[in-house]
Image (tube, rainbow, N blue to C red; front, side, top):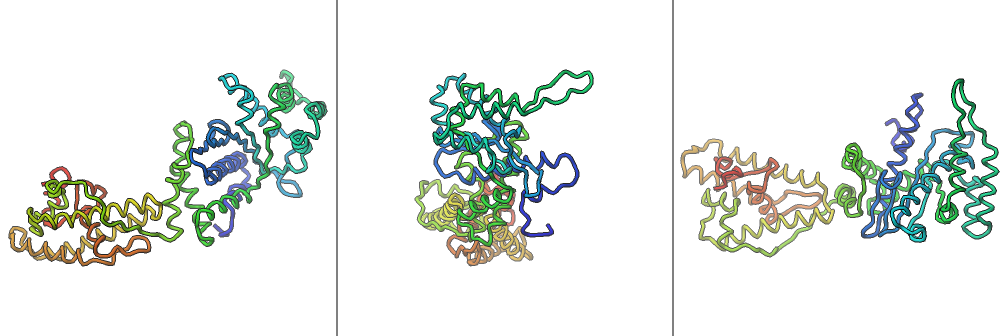
Length: 433
């Protein structure tokens, strides 16, 4: 990018001369508003959907808000084009909402229930402050004018609209905006709809600004907000867009969204590891020796099967590390990348030490193998500077990590390790001793 401060939506609004730029920028305006609504979720049970109930929909414990998103790349001398009183986007949105209300009533909702729980909002980058119809709606909501005043005004507007001139051999056509107006004023739901109707001007720049505010509101330092927003947009695009491609309904709860982005945001807050100690062990002493990481140590005679206290101590270290990792990840204090980096660094350390310890060893000599394994374990157990995020594990949890990595029954991601030169044959997941 030529300019670091280029806004995301401004970037898609560059006029390349191709006819698709309008729909392309309009789609991103709707998509980014969907992300903004997800970022604004703050109540348990809240959900946001995309192209399910409306362009964007929000459900806060049964209270539904239907959002129509209307975007333009057209400009006048003062900036983006205004939302005019006869704007097709305005009247088409009202027509869509009347259809939505009708469907809910037909499905068994009472009219009172619909208007007690539903709100309708037009979000647009067209300025609506000077739109006389929008201003009249506000006056109607405040009891200053009547519904008849609104209908009379709309009737005057409709009378000024002309039908399109038919082309040769073509049947006469009616102006679509006139049809939307007639549908609106003729609907029994029109006056109630107006009482639950909002018009919100949201420029492209303000949309991005609001998204950044919500990112900052999640404890991301100011200097990292731009990078964090790009990460969130990328994560949402990667994980959620395929749902749309498959033609499935896209509806996200607050918990699902938090699980999607909080670990990504953690990397911008300063990563913290949450150590856990003395995790309760719910395994009998007999079963402890059947654990693969214990079998690995037994195979090189680092411990004996009757060393119950040592087996318990090693198990405790392993379980405490596993619980620490789980707590750090589930509390969103660590990112996927930081955990991957920890395993990668631990594996590389083990791999280098394994090669050194077994470089000149006769692998058919039990004495030499056991001595090499002892040297390897001494190196591993003295590794105290492994870092995860901003924190060092220390000896205790570092040992727990390595023991976990030697449990080939659970370590399936290519970072499995062992102590015996033939550990991979002996403990390969299918043949765990």
